[in-house]
Image (cartoon, one colour):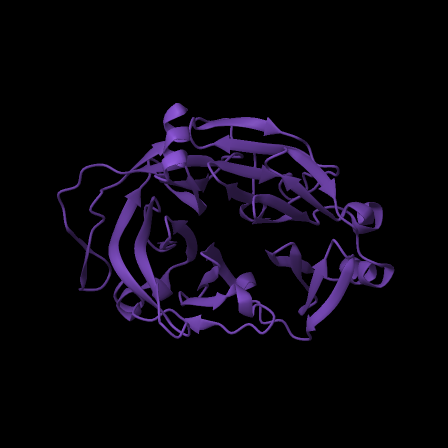
Length: 335
């Protein structure tokens, strides 16, 4: 563990990528870490004719120890070198917190929440983990929101919604789409609200939400929100513009979209790979379904701040030691 402490002190932390697979007829997910290995090959061919540079570091997938809890993607987040799984899956409410230490690849129990939750909405902001929902609102309205401080390892219940909003939350679908500077952005019945716990105030932000976050995979990289939509489009918006949000296309990636058939993929994931955008995708029509493709993309913002250009550094694939998987998602951690 000393080597990781030293890396952190001198600013040479390494990005570790984890892939979580849900396998057929397996109640618990399987975790794999993606490791670099020597690779002499330099070209890879996708479904199209264009060849891309392969990952120069090479790659291999290594199973992490079992004993993983049953988890869901929206309730699993990363803070530093640790992955937090909050609550239980659907129809299995739990107050438990599981923590995967990416330095030792071991799971441990964290402090329990104040309420049992199933598939809650979870976001991180400045080293804190914000949790919303996953419990019966009429029964736990005072505990609808809570926050976990990863430094003190303690939970704090946040003020709940007023009576009017509580009725809306009870009768309609809702999603937590973001947390910025301790301000919640919540979509209720296609309307978007902001909630500031320290003031206990709710505000209608827009009557018709344009939250693309609900329709794709997203990741924050240096105060910019990136999204790969379910149609394979790669877009971004600035955190400072969240209330007047404008989504824009990442320039320079047409070749990736067209020649890698990204738009024909069946599922996507995006991660922060040391400041670069890592896009992962899979196809449902390829048998056996044991491969995931990925691209590493460096990002550069224009001088006027209105455009972000992406440069495709490499495109490669990961092959997993299984016959087939049902679904996947990925997380990155700094160690």
